[in-house]
Length: 395
Image 1: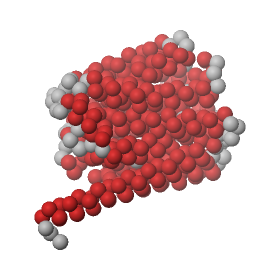
Image 2: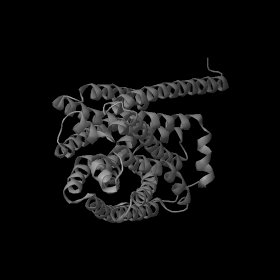
Image 3: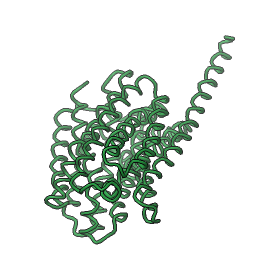
């Protein structure tokens, strides 16, 4: 794999750290700003919505820039957002900082996925995308547990200062290692035209509901562990690290499987994620079993990512950049839906296991959408075969 992929992964590590770090610091943030745990959880939903609404517009605005220049500009925006978060005097200011960082997130992974896929042979595209996303998964193994520990020991602001430093390192890595990139061809109109395809919209819907179960559970992992499982707060970073190990493994497995067969890998990974959400709910009160279940949940969570991203690139063939950014938004719209829906169940008094049951329900929706997408793809293939054979006169 080209060194440029590792440069993309460095920045992905910083972005992943700031995305997931709130999950381990909800009690500290809630106490500092005087808000409830579900209200602090909205910092997760707010970030996710920022990715969903910010990625496509920024990608269009940068349509005349080379992809490398776009990646550098996005890292500068990411650093600025985290700097504002570190200095935030109020909950509202912190939310604004999260929004700025989130805007960079959506466009960065959208553009980065296209760059990663173009750097390798077609048969290795999913694996190249998975390698870039390895930075995101490693953030859960190293960045988030370390950031959680720093936040608990020195205050949550110290965590955001560390993220700022990681962002600067990522910016330098892209500048030094990513080769010069051509400007996207065809312009904004061509990119927008790809959204006329029904397959693109079904692929985006698969991403939303196929990934929503992840954040329904992980947003509230700290209160689930301490409130149901009887874990100490100090155990949260350790379990988050194990969850992150699961993400790394699942991401690499998902890339290999998607290179072989995209849709079957989506069916399998989303089904496994749904099943494991039920297992997490049932075993939340049993510490050892819960740790095993949440680690496996991490494996299933990111086994979905390479095939879902690859599916969108396939559906939007010829003009993939904007659709790729939109799919990153779809991941984060799923994050927002998952965390928001899970927060509602807690507010309704259903307890801290309710988020896992919510995740299972969302996973079932994801499987239904995937089945519809598969039916449409088979129908299009059959129609294409019939059309080609009628033109050639082949029986």
